[in-house]
Image 1 (tube, rainbow, N blue to C red):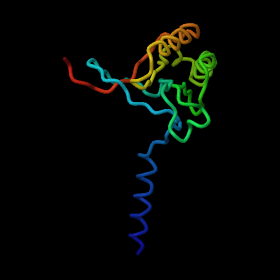
Image 2 (tube, rainbow, N blue to C red):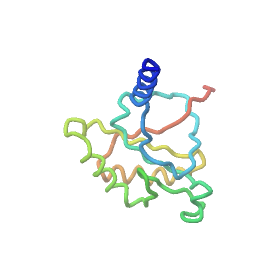
Image 3 (tube, helix red, strand yellow):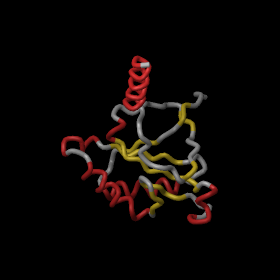
Image 4 (cartoon, rainbow, N blue to C red):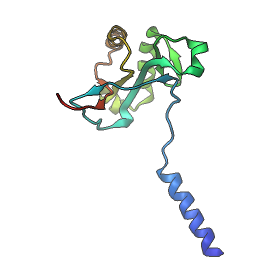
Length: 140
């Protein structure tokens, strides 16, 4: 019985070490578009995510059925993006701030006008490194 408890604690410790915590709860449905030139990010710890899509069915009563912007754990407006970028910068060490990348995770049904508006707000905030999430598609 003594060795059984050792094995159980080793397994518990192993799973505690390898498990990653979810950074934020997703409130919008995202089916990423397909891309032919897909590249993986180098440092995922330096990425700030902006999610854009239609709210899930249980959230539609509160937020409606139009595409919405989600910053971290809350639905936000377009004008909140500048504050979001500034908060993300201050949360990182001084040396990493120039390498911060903003990833736009948008549903493939979201209109390009909304993505363009988000890009304009990111320019105003000085966040010029933008990454678009996509799933790997076939090359035509």
